[in-house]
Length: 319
Image (cartoon, rainbow, N blue to C red; front, side):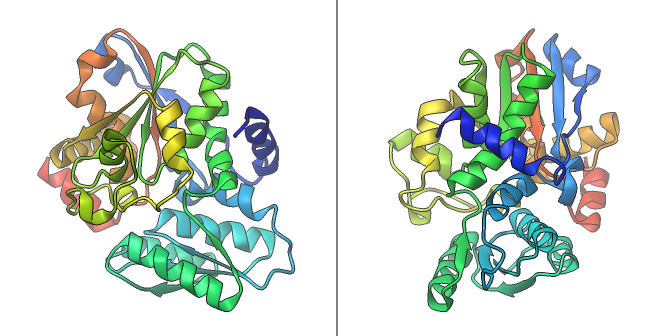
């Protein structure tokens, strides 16, 4: 993928997504004796970064299509639903069992239908592809698509416009769409900026796959439930994100569940931000590894804020 694809994506999404704030946190900066900037995608339309890729992809589809199908644990589904509504397309979202009620409500709010299928995101994705092929509709992957990746990469373009002298950028990792886009958009212009992926140790398909040099199936690596549900699930075989992560990402760090809890609390207490587990993993990584970022100027992508109220309140009381 070339930088020009990301610049075109930025032009397509302009006016339909927010150019989000890059906020400096003095409290977090003091922790590393440096400067920490938060890229607030939790304040994005649909309260997550996924709308960027959805708009970039759907804006290039013909308006006379019979409909699109995707699979999602929540944020991608909301983004496709919202973008479909804005662009006059119809969408059906396949979601796994256990998808948070808040995310279901938001999918419906934007006028899309959802079908619950499978216990995991991987099973929902497989079913979604089958339904799309059966019904002759277009399936849109949450991450394994160059237009989705280019849309997410507009965050990287914004970061380097807002703060070009960054030294490291911490990016949540699931299937790799976000970090692939951000890494290319930044590295093609500023190759010395370190791109560091963050995954929950409870479900880290990309980390374990990179470690052995091939995409692992869900049966081949340890995984268990995580607060960062938006990052859970495996990687499709032959996904274009895997070689992009191999090429452009400098390192992937794992974080513990307790650290994710503390990060959610810290963002609320110090910054008055409501952030979901997937959006808080970068803060968790910095707290676990402050020596890696000592005296640096870093940016942390806060990827989303769609956390259920009862869960948020419970976490705030526990920490």
